[in-house]
Amino acid sequence: MNVTVNGSPVDLAEDATVADLVAQRSSGHDRVAVACNGDVVPRSTWAATRLSPGDAVEVLAPTAGG
Amino acid sequence: MTTTPLTDELAPALAAEEAGDPFTIAGETFTSRLVLGTGGLPSMDSLERVVRASGTQLVTVALRRVEAVAGNSMMQVLDRVGVRLLPNTAGCRTAREAVRTAELAREAFGTDWVKLEVIGDEQTLLPDAVELLDAAEQLVLKGFKVFAYTTDDPVLGRRLEDAGCAAVMPLGSPIGSGLGIRNPHSISLLREMVTVPVVLDAGIGTASDAALAMELGCDAVLLASAVTRARDPERMALAMRQAVEGGRLARGAGRIPRRFHAQESTATAGRPEL
Image (cartoon, rainbow over all chains, first blue to last red):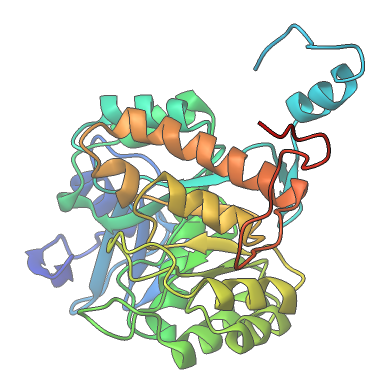
């Protein structure tokens, strides 16, 4: 299944969940936040949230800022 | 501060100053009136030294795509120092984008505090008043404590307060410009026209700018570049801490009126004729 993650196309397993994607993308980071098609996906629902083909996902981490 | 009182009479006053001049914002009380932005430092080691030197208890942070972030060392530093976090919506251009960013920040940082920044112009990074007010209204309804980065327009400040913002944060001049407070009178008017805390945010270049903000009646100062991009950020952090404290004390002490001509400070009575 093709989805877009942080602006780039990614091929994921058909049954991939948000939790799978986060595990794949955010090693070394905690306090990650995820949006799918613009909507926040709460951490408590990551494991139960299946991705769909064409989804646009943002995986974000804390950084410095003014 | 000194632990030896100068005189018995002065001791209670000094003790009161040492106990601080607490500052309450969104229901939380702080003894430091300096809010520090974390952006622009070369290393996490320098971040820790700067945060400690500044004495700040509240720092701004941001969210970016995970690939663009070098690891979680910043959070480790901030957790270790024990400061409260104020996530920002830096880079947002519309209310919709800012609201979504705030929701993501609440999820990531576990706080409903947000520095709401909605930018209307690429070159000046000036706030977009229309989008800002729209975003503020939406976020307040969603339960956020909104710290609104705004222009120095007192009427807009009042509208943001009416919308339920926890703090109004006018710029002194554009972000990162170091041009100081270009319209001090607007800041004074804004301070008088709203009851929520006013935090001077953006434009501070050096310590005297931070002191002026406090002398004008601001409740706190938020700055980043003036410290993080200084040649010696740690030393500048200490300078800002002392400037904010000095400006606050001067505001409370009451400045003398400005005079066109001089007024002698040595008595004329008893002057000898020589």
